[in-house]
Image (cartoon, rainbow, N blue to C red):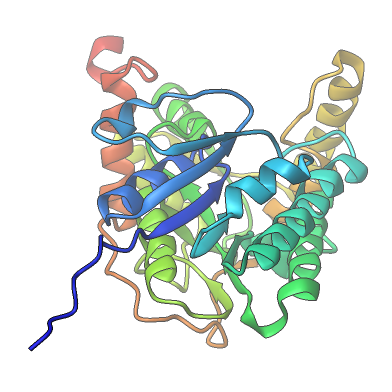
Length: 325
């Protein structure tokens, strides 16, 4: 009786853009731990301490390089498009990266016969609020034109965790300031730890699920400003006073920040559009958001904030409260 010979194991290959970013480098690590052969796109050779024990395949290039994108996607079972801009001088700059970049990645993935998972943003739900939000929705629309109903779109909310400079500012304020600002108490905001976001995106690589999906931690209904600031204060071991800031003050600060950005030639994260995002009252997941059978989160907000603070202090990014006395 002839027995069929077993050939070499079939290589599972996944391609990732934005692999050197805050979320992307975690995603690469999770995928490698799940025995995927990971291929990444980067402008230059990279090394990340988190990638010890494995080395992703590297394609040198960027989102404007069609041949690099073709090489990235060639032979991949799935492509995860994480790359994108979160701050830029104007809408045109956002669109070049977030709309045209998504279109080019979608074209390359489609030509290679790969699935596409587009990592967008919950901000895309409200594209009128800011240039960033509008460009993220534009990126979704561009990819959908190419993939149609086969496209998977992932909309994360605010992402935090070790290495994130935006939440570091929050922890520094909570640790060093006598007060913390809070905005409209009716506002609800979903959050997720970067490790949990990476695990859930990796789950979609393993288990295809086309459609529009939103991420959150174990509180899809989100958090209010008071609870958020109290949780940050507890994480750093401080008790600053919470002070309600009127929306007009945030708008004025954003205008000032914009003019300072123009004067210095640097991009600012706080723009009038970003102010509108901050002042928007609903960044929670709704009952209409389909939530697949994701792995359970490792980090509820309180535990995730505490873990992040320990990391910031161990790396010298944040002073220990005791050492400030």
